[in-house]
Each structure stands twice: as structure tokens, then as C-alpha cells.
Length: 193
Image (cartoon, rainbow, N blue to C red):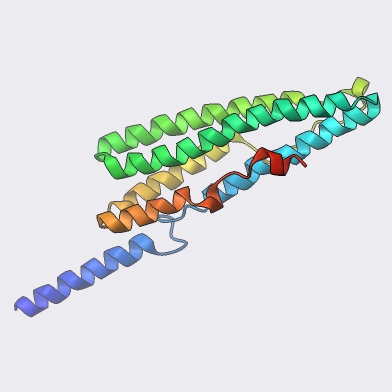
């Protein structure tokens, strides 16, 4: 009888570990991080192109140079917040009980959402249609902070549930992937060329 109980326990353990780590399952899918990273990075060339159009029309390179500096500061704020957000969300899951973890994740998600909204407002106002300056249409971005924050929140909640079915080392490895260089924003100096 003991052998059958042991076999059942082993099968359940294997099932839990494989379902928690299965690639592409909603419980373990953190691909939204790479998607968010690419959407943030895609804003920089569009803003610089807009500034270049105005600069060419006005014949003044200071417009694009000063604009690059200003956008760089805003991007830098978002870049540091992106790092903090991913690290804080990882720590919320690893170091807290169920209720505290969810409150912690909600708090950090709202903070990052606010940072993204500030960045979006800045670049949207900077790239508005301005016929006087030779810009005939608004620049369109694939950057929607509310949608991104909602998807990030759902992904981390699913990751929290998946991590609950893992052992401590597996949990750390699983959540450690959020801090990988693949999810790190490209430095502004590389994007602004």
C-alpha cells in the first residue's frame, strides 16, 4: 500500500511542477515584459523623427538637440522605473504572504502605470500636430500605458499563482528571468542615434 501512495504523491508532484513551468501557459507567460520593452523603445525614434522634421523646417538644429536631451531625461526616468518595477514585483512574490503579495503587486503596478502615463503625456504633447512648424499630423505610438499596465498586472498575478506551486529554488529561477538583460531597456544613447 505504501508504494502506491508514494507513486501517487510523486505523480502529483511532477504534474504540479510541469504545469507551473509549462511554456506558453497563461500561468507562466511573462512574454509581456519583452513586448512592453519593445513598445517603450519604439517611442524614441518616432519622437526624434518628429523633432527632426521641425528642426529641418525651421533650419535650427538646436530644436532636435535640445529635444533629444529632454526626451532622454524622461526616458531615463522610465528606464529606472522599469528596472525598479520588475525587481519590486519579483520581491513582492518571493517575500510576502498571499494577501500582502497581491497588495504589494497592485501598489507597484499602479506606480509604474503612473510613470508610463507621465512619459506618454510628455511624448504625446511633444509630437502633436503643428501646422505652423511643418508637422501635418500627430505621431502615432503603439504605447498605451493603461493597457500595458493591465496586461503586466495580469501576467505577474499569473506568475504569482505559478510560483506558489514551485519550490523555493524553482521560484527564484522562474522569477529571476524577469530581471534578465532581455527585459532591460536599451540605453537612450543607443536609441537616439
